[in-house]
Length: 409
Image (cartoon, rainbow, N blue to C red; front, side):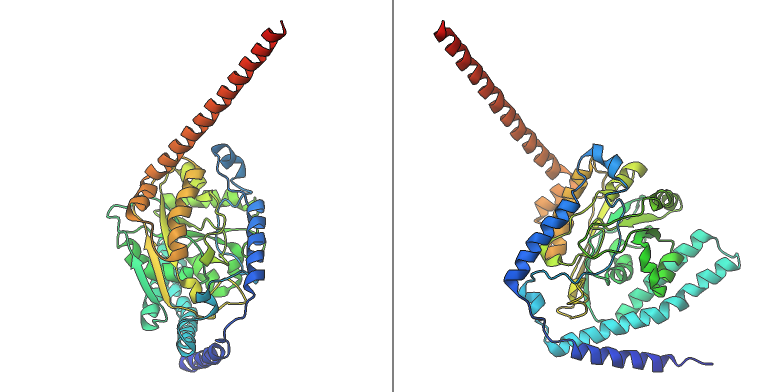
């Protein structure tokens, strides 16, 4: 029986168009109530997820504080949003057309990936290639599909800010996470972003994503590294299965030895309010970097949430099509989890929230570590002043007590 792919695509596209036009009306919000919910929500998140800043905490919290993070479920919790989200500047027709293109891209990926991933699978079964070659071929096939389908269906205007390392070393890559489209954007732009000499990357992901057969096919064939975690909503504390981390550490070490880099998302889940900044981040990437003695490189995404938002009440309500993907130079080995988190939140947080970098001097200072040294020096100076003031007060109090004792005599 022959499958008429053209008829299938027409059905998918027609359904996408109808849904796009019917759902393109604006959402209504209560700003005052939502702002109060946002403040309460953030306080709750930070209470449940304190950042593991000290070196002593890293060893004990490597498992139970979201060591390695990846994608997770979306959230319908209401947060306040800027006017750019509540009212689309694109216009109703352009937003619907963009959504139609995006859904066509996703449908085409679902058709193309199984076909593109079959050759490396078959070659492995025939013992013509080994597992490592199969995983590299599968990753290249996924990137090829995403790159060319995005060219054929240009639903987004993607700007890449690349950094090409001519002699890359084994590294850990970290990035913010704002949309379910992020994986497609990273696959499509990786060649432009990191250059031809880039090392292939294995991403740490939430194993429940394998419930989607296409995602499961891509991730397993490419050798991505799963981590077990209880289902939760975006913004809630991640509850990881500690038993899976031993296998994860072993897989990460093996990936380095086989010529792969590791990709981790420090936020641990989709960010339901990227316009307000990053979610509380975790230092799992630093822990892995310290254990493997590898540098950490940073990447950043901005704008994918305007195409496909993490919040279920916004979802695919398109409010913009401009996307930026940034690769930063100067990957380095951090001295502490606190230093890594502060740098990630300053550098990637600024770009992910506002779509622009810090001023050049400040950006370079964060990337080369001099900014953190300045902060620590200022902190040490403040602590020294406080200590001197405390000693001075103690000395004054001691002298006053002595004078009172002499007066009584």
